[in-house]
Image (cartoon, rainbow, N blue to C red; front, side, top):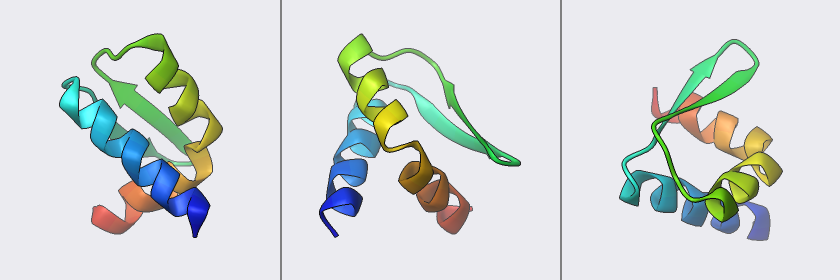
Length: 57
């Protein structure tokens, strides 16, 4: 549950900076740019973010 909340915060932070997430097979692609700390958080939560992107598609 905590992992999901953290991933949602990262998802919203990416959106705030104008970056988008795309699922391509087993890959999570970040389109746009965001600060390095947010990108590192996205890398840590990549599996959860991938599941979230697939669910919203």
